[in-house]
Image (cartoon, rainbow, N blue to C red; front, side):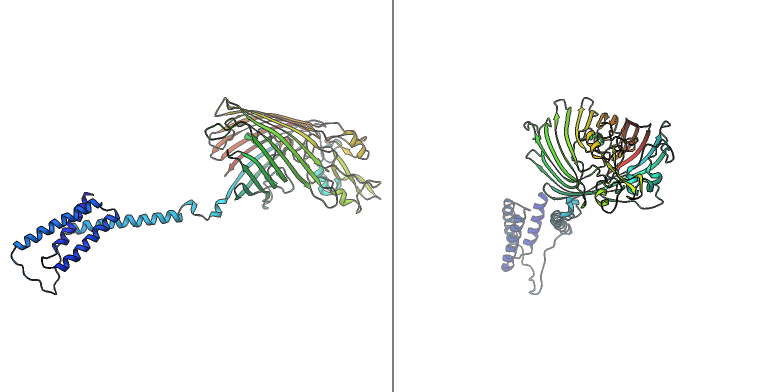
Amino acid sequence: MANKKQLMALVLSGLVGIAHAGEKEELLKLRNTTTNLIKQLVKSGVITDKMAEEMIKQAEADAGKQVAEAKEAPAKEAVPADEVRVAYVPDFVKDEIRQQVRSELREEVVGDVMQKAKNEQWGLPNALPEWTKRFKLSGDARLRSQNEFMSAENVNNSPRSATASYFDYQAINDAGGATNAGPDAYLNTNKDRHRFRERVRLGIDASVTEGLSVGMRLATGNQRDPVSTNQTLGNTGQRYDFTIDRAYIKYDAVNDDKFKWLTLSGGRIKNPWYTAGGEFSGGSELVWDTDLSFEGFSGTISHQLGESDSLMGTNHLNRSVFLTAGVFPLQESAFSSEKWLFGGQVGADWGFVNQDSLKVGLGYFDYVNVEAKQSKLPNGTCDESNIRNLSASRPEFMQGGNTIARICYEGTEQTPVRAARMVGLASDFNIINANISYDMAMFAPYHARLSGDFAKNIGFDLNDLQNRYARGSVYPHGGTTVGTNVATDETNAWQIRADFGWPQAEAAGHWNVFALYKHVERDAVLDAYTDSDFHLGGTNAKGWVLGGNYGLLKNTWLTGRWLSTDIITGPPFGNDVLQIDVNTQF
């Protein structure tokens, strides 16, 4: 401020100095100019009102002094009328004035530009159009080495073997009969196999409005296989399928405490059911494989228990109950009754003061019209009169393990062939499923989790099988034709699991390990939707799984699993599988 005072004094002194005693008009112009300049400086905030008054008083005093001196001095040479004299201003004063003007001009211009840049969001992430902010891109990629080792004690299941007992009924249906399927009609029980596999998934989520979103996910894999998005390498350079795995509309409603109390989903959606151990592995795969997507509609209502008394305004013990319901069309047909899945689940999530947590869920899943419809022709074959109706009753996908019923024979009514042309599920499936998991925080930051999963198919009815199907047309998995159609009641499935470590190994150095034992009887669950890796997919299997995850980099981790399984009922059929995965996500 002192510099500004000195500068103004010099300017005013210089201006005053150019006036002469007899030049009244020039003095008036100079006075007005000086006054206006001082007022403008006050208005711009360069000087205060008080400083302005002092400067004017000082200027008047200096002017009076100069007038007095002029009267005492000898008369000066008259100035010609066409001559203009300007007071001398030192160079250092000119430079100081110039620098001050530049500085003030620069600050003003920069301020204007910065304000404009802020208003128009120049060069900022938010500078993109508003609609682009609604989209979120995510995805993952996995490379897998899979080694499959068959037990030396396994039954010889080759086509020419008299002991062949395990059939690939999916291949039989696809080929139009066991004869057409040839060697593909028999499962591999004797040859070890090594495969490299890949999985790539890409998801896009878009926010429509508050609470409402639309999503889509693309994935590799066989379009016919609902429980695997793996692509096996070694296709002679042929391109992979990359198709829509999910496509849905979802609505989430939250209360004042930001607690999500309602979720509604429709389309091809993720699994809406709670399964034990999901924080570590995506959940138990006893009933549903983790890659399975559901087609239909679901809704979940949750209720928060207790008052909100934490600093963040939420229930600090995280206690809530939930109810989920869903309806899913499984197989639409114009020639036969449609197949449906209706389901419901209730559960609770209970937090404790010591940061432990307990979560339980009890569900009921009712499959409708999934049983095979058998040909009523005398020789049990299919012809133009019944082929469409019968074909609609066969499953579109089977992994193996469930009890099978013949739909019709190969050949014609005049020349039947005693080999199945089409097969379907013999039993109905009405599954009761219970899940429970307990997470212990005593080892924080590591987690110790114990979980269990139990399923029971109460839809299996021995009397119904005996009365519904013709004699000799029911095929238990791993067994010969049941002549009297009296298959055994094998309808229980259960799993116990233990996990320890970080819940996710998505950061460098994070790790976790796990172990589980699983027992899945023939008709406990639908073989099409259960774990696709355990015993290489399907039911009628038991065994151990040991594994772990280790974070290599951020969002990159290594997974290893050893699956050792055996058949529950039937001739010897055991295998061990080693999987080594490199996982990435973004």
